[in-house]
Each structure stands twice: as structure tokens, then as C-alpha cells.
Amino acid sequence: MLEESERSGLLALARRSIASGLGRDAPARLPEAAWTPPLLELRASFTTLKLDGRLRGCCGAIEPRRTLVADVWHNAWASAFVDPRFRPLRAGELAALEIGISVLTPLEPIAADTEAELMACLRPGIDGLVLGCGAARATFLPAVWQQLPQPGDFIAQLKLKAGLAGLPFSAGMRAFRYRTESFQSARGVELAA
Image 1 (cartoon, rainbow, N blue to C red):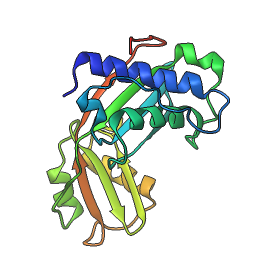
Image 2: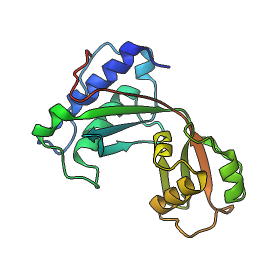
Image 3: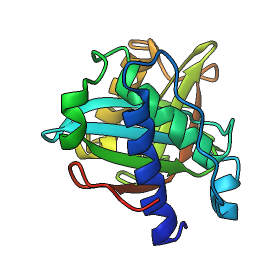
Image 4: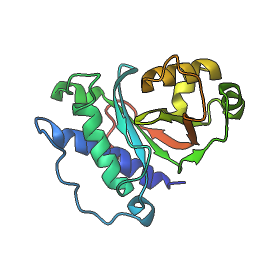
């Protein structure tokens, strides 16, 4: 678990990444600072942006590739400017932007041979889920359980997202679970870094 000061620092860092990324085609360089050891660990994270309570962007990684501070810095910029579902964020939207960060635990394989076994293994509201088959792969963060509270619906929509709709869960399909430590800033709130 991160300390409250580390959480608020990551939220401020995400907002700074977005503000410094306006009009750029790549994230600015991560600012140098005296980061605490937990923020320098290799961790996977997602940054979720909302405007007026509605999704405005969400990008991240399900497996660790960079330090947590670098991952949040990059994902905040990507969520604001390159999420293919949304147009790039405009400067006038920054003040009203709500930022959420989800730090993932390592992926845990789920031993299931059928979709019924997979549903029985899931903990609604707790587990994030990754489904994959070959090169196709997608995830839903645990927060998605709020919109899809039934395991069957959760799995069906995730299969659709992964391009696996209509395929039965089989030995060729793999499933992984993870949990998240999630926190968010209120609309437009700047927190001390």
C-alpha cells in the first residue's frame, strides 16, 4: 500500500504530465525528484480520466515495464492525448478533469477449463481480469464491476473487447486476475507533489 503522500504525489504528477503534454506528440520528460522507494518499483498502472463523471480516457499497462512514477507519467499523457476512443484533451478541459490511478498487483493465473469454472473463481468488485487467446488480449479493471456486476456479463463484454466474442472459453484461452490499489483526485484539484 502506498502512503497518502505518495498517492497525492502521483495524482499531482499525472495532472502535471497532462498539462505539460498539451500540444505535444509525446510525453514531456519525467521531472527529476526524490521519489520514495515504492514509487521507483517496477509496477503496472492505469490512469483513468473523467469529465463530468464520464470516461474521457484510460490507458495503462497490465504488466510492469517501468517504474511506477514513469508509468503514471506516461499513462496520464496517453489517456489524455492518444486513447483512440477519444479526441485529444483540450486545454480548457484540464481544470474540470478528474484523475484516477489504479496500481496493479502482479497477474495471477486462474486455473479454469470452462467459463463456468472461471465465473466461479472471480470475486466481483475485487478482481481485475485479463483474457487472452493467441495475440488477442484485453482487461477490465475491478471498477468495471460497477457497470457489469454479473460475472457472465463481465466475461462476455471482456471477450468482446478482446475480439474473442462467440468463442467458448477453452484450454486455448487464458485468464489472469489482479487487484488494484485505486485512488483519485477531485475535479481539477492540484495536489502537492
